[in-house]
Length: 251
Image 1 (cartoon, rainbow, N blue to C red):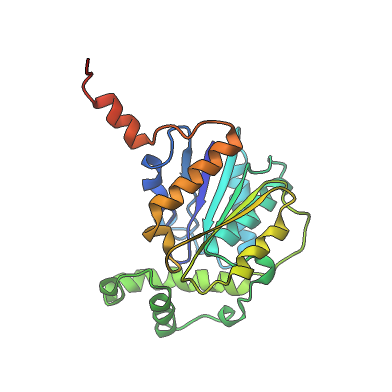
Image 2: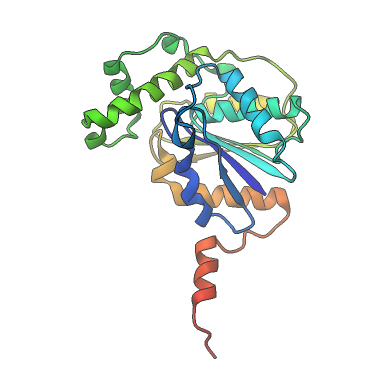
């Protein structure tokens, strides 16, 4: 099972690289980097979510020769939703499951306050409210000079997003929310309308970035869901498997 992971606003998909040793060995964690960051730093930043999803579908479609799942957090969840539809439109099989984390359902999103570019001060204010960036990073002028253009483009994507009613996705949708996040329970439940298959909502303790503070619980829930979809046992995590191989035999 390949797990395609999409980043949140201002982030790189490589935040998911550590998941490779936390999920079962039969899960192929594939961070999906967006233009303008990480290994794609030299490419122009994307500001149109539909165009980004279409571009990613063209890039990924030929690689999907087996079952796959999609995971996205915050803005990444919306792009994952659009990517699922775009992949199907391009003739690829539907994902086995869509994981949407820390994001309102597309149909109830209101990004109107982000339709115009935010100033550096406004972006820093948003970062502080989201509570996902350490104070020492926020006060590092050099770091912020490189991070704020990426964040500004991502907020413009939030503002440019327009929901389009379409056929429901044929795959299950599994949603995660934070108990202290501003996203309401009703806005998370609204994801139910986007699938003709099963729906599940799990609430985890924490604010918007529960993806980090509750990583172990989140990983366990993802692993269990993928196991149910693939008909496989959860099995050992990669780190546990490696440890078992290295452990001296006992009699």
